[in-house]
Length: 65
Length: 271
Image (cartoon, rainbow over all chains, first blue to last red; front, side):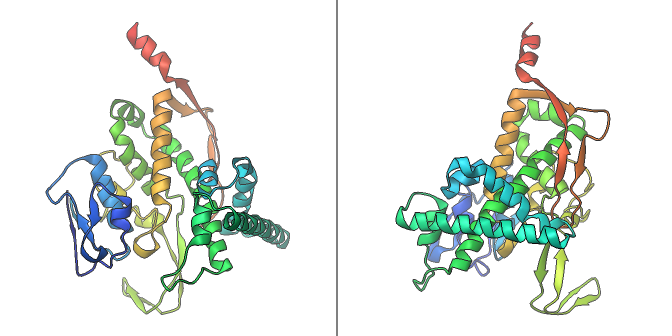
């Protein structure tokens, strides 16, 4: 799985890095920043990333399975 | 219920009355009620509100490290306080939301565990699969099966235009069985990669605030249950469960099960 955040969509609502601290951190202007930028397979992280993408208020988290 | 009672900072001994109030609170979600029942629900609802208002007053005077204290101390970006109405809304949602849906989620996941051959064995062998198991149960059993929304503009779907200001019932449970998103949608699949992309907690700006807590409770429940017990099965030949009639919520009226201690399994293996 690969995660990206669309900076044009992100509205700094902070849900991703408040909830899933292994995957996201606070970047410039409070925007979400992906910690693991390379592909990963870990099942726990796949479930977390999918949950984060669903919870993002503006749908800015993009996943490639 | 105990978990949310503690998180909110309410006395643990109150969890039974809180459970009663939340059970009553959700009745209008599911039933066509008689006028007498409506009166009863309204009276019990007021009792819950009075209880929460008193608890919030107490937190103002004796702040503690809990959610209710956080709520009464919270301010808007402009520094103003939330209205009593808003604070009550949050507190009620936290109490009710944390009880009904999680409890039903756990019960219906147990039903899924029993009804799908091979799942329990696989979870005993690979406890890491419990996470996907929980997501698949949320997808297939969605404790909140649907919710009402109001359209803010005209929406066109499948060649039908839904006008602005229409009340629509969003059917999360139906979306969760969309074969374009979940191939073989009726199958509980422990290897489904996108299992957690279901709508059981809704999505985006309306995404369930309590989803991380619900997921934690569901995962811990099954980790502990599977550590301690095995051979989960229905207790009787038939009529082991039934659903509460209703539209918005999916709830089990009862679920009769049996299981064996997991220790016995280890002893047998050792011998």
